Length: 104
Image (tube, rainbow, N blue to C red; front, side, top):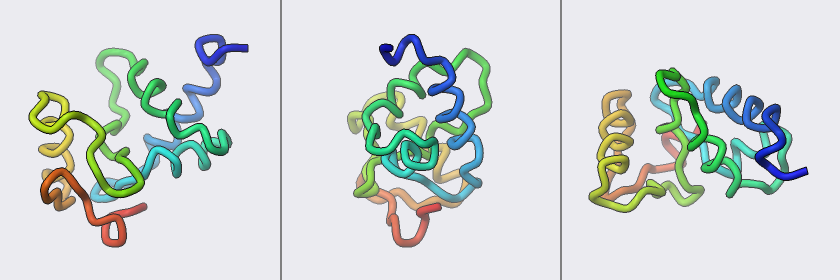
C-alpha cells in the first residue's frame, strides 16, 4: 500500500505535531517515531504538506534533527517558520534552533 493510500498514517503524524507545545520543536525523526512510523522521517514532511487549508496544526515546530530549518533560506515558508517560532520564544540563529534547549 502506498503512502497516499494510508490516510490514517497522516492523521497519526498530525496528532503528534498538534501535541508539540508552544516554545518547543521536534525533529522529523522524533515525530515519525512518536507516530509509530519508525524511521520514516522523510515521510513527515510530505504528510505536513498535505495539511488542509485553514488547519491549526503547528507544522512550523518540526525541524531537522540538527536544529536546522528545512526550507531554503530566504524562501517565504522559511521566513514564516522562523517568524512563528520566534513569536513562541524559540531562538533561531542562522536558520538553526538549539535542540538541547528547545527540543520537546
